[in-house]
Amino acid sequence: MRLDDDRVMKLQPQLSLVFNGQCEAAFRLYERSLGGSIAFMMTWGQSPQAAEAPPGWETKVYHATLKIGDTAILGNDYPAGQYVSPQGFSIILQVDDPDAAERIFLDLSVNGKVGMPLQETFWALRFATWVDQFGVPWSINCERPVQPA
Image (cartoon, rainbow, N blue to C red; front, side, top):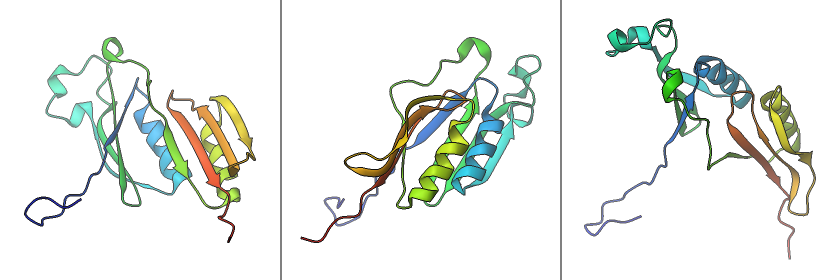
């Protein structure tokens, strides 16, 4: 997008996931399954808010950043009285390899709730929806190659 004075602006929507004490386990799974890397992770006990950490919450994640290519996913653990389960969105993974779609779906759907099993559809070689074991909603889409006209 061009601004009025010929400068360029890049729009980068930010995804921030909230967990109920399981942020580190979730980010470790996402890191492994999606080929990302945890760029930053700070516990409540290490944070500037350490004195306000609920009892037993010192080792829970105050802030984490997971990098997957050029995309970052942020995450943290909310104390029990403040946590609300994710709703109103899903993370959509676009892949171009059906084998990768199968592997990622199998990794991330373990102990979760599958809405639509991984399958071929009229638009995709593989498509699925699920909520993972941490309560995060996902979709994976491996579109059919465009056929030449």
